[in-house]
Length: 303
Ligand code: GAL
Image (cartoon, rainbow, N blue to C red):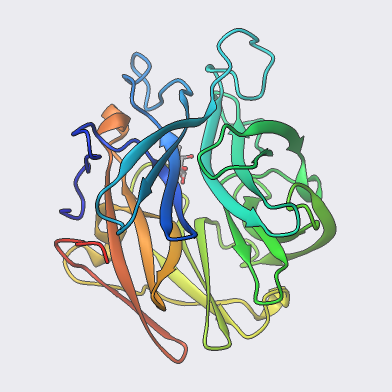
């Protein structure tokens, strides 16, 4: 798989899983993302909402399309997942208590002024997911997001809020479908989005992009010994190294996942004029204490 390009699934069709996440359940990897497999709206850097797709793989290289696990609503224009709406950055987490999967998404209207978090659940990793609720977490807006499970099993939604000025880490309830009310503000007024979080050797690492829409900018990482001690999250540096490192290799962070103890970053190479053509990269993350490095590699060969 050539990094930066649009990859194909086992049938030869383009993989439509943008802004997504990769999880492992049993022996299988699942990749969820925005299905942008339609033309841009005329004159816009936007596509209608199609659905949240799912792909499965035994090795992170051969991907089989499992269908849209959450389909856009095509009939009720008042639905938060109507095809006229924006539904981005889907993140899926397994809930061991309920033996089901929670899917979190950034819900918005066409001009990004709605900015809420949506949640859906399914008993199977390949869906279908039932849409449950729209959340106005911490009474702030919810935009780019990721989910993160800590070592004690508690889960968190990490999301841009305060009109993209500040990131929030909000604790999820036992069902992973709502909030406990406990949250912390992170990187206040630093205008970061596209968050992805990793816990490795007693440290938490948070990578994020700046807020320049589809245009790439510098990735930065922050570390902390305590997830919920907001003031201690400090931006450290750009972890990227290699051609195009100043602009995250022309990409933006989507999620971090670990395979065999090795953390990887999934990235989107957005093509705003033709979003369905946006490519992907998967790059290994190298960590040494609080030092993080993400080196460009031309290919990702799976595991
Ligand atoms: C980016 C964001 C994407 C999408 C885009 C729309 O900043 O990370 O998920 O919302 O803006 O312009």
